[in-house]
Image (cartoon, rainbow over all chains, first blue to last red; front, side, top):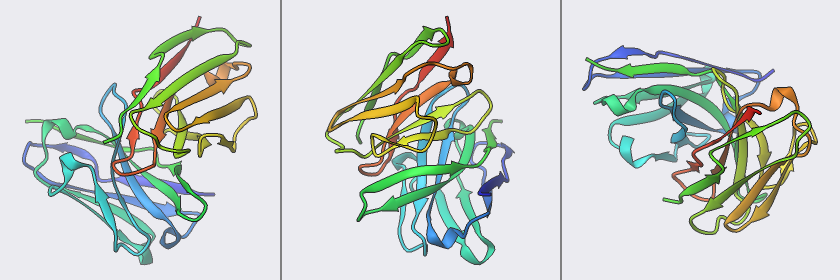
Length: 123
Length: 105
């Protein structure tokens, strides 16, 4: 059974840092792109970043570029999001998701999601 | 960035009703359009990918290409009351519609 479990959320002051982790089980993450998506309280979904299988390609939402870093440790079957210079508008539930991206088959979607971890940026 | 616009933002329906949600993209995204269902306090769940491919109960179906897409629930079931999001994966940043909340009439 595919499972994604996020951890590392919490309350942090503006300008602070947090590192989110996502532990995967039931599949080998080195075969997949992996993604972070967030959802502010009572709001819709917002894609944050994703990372290619070997970590060589990374893409970010403009508003987090230069502040957030997505990374992975395939040996630990884990995904990470280092969040620096946090702002109030980064307050959200952060979801880790498995991405199916196949250029030959013209497929790209998020097929499994974790339950999320809440990040609150407030003084 | 590609803007995704869903309509309606909310709707009220009864069990057994046929429900259709529309999603428009600000530019052509061919068929790089996915639909997700989210229930309160839960993670989103993939319903439809590549505009019309489903891996869920057959009462859910998707159609469209280019800039106009629809998600149809042929006969609404009690477990279908939720919020539905479209999402384009044509290019980054991947963007979502604002959501359509399906409520009990």
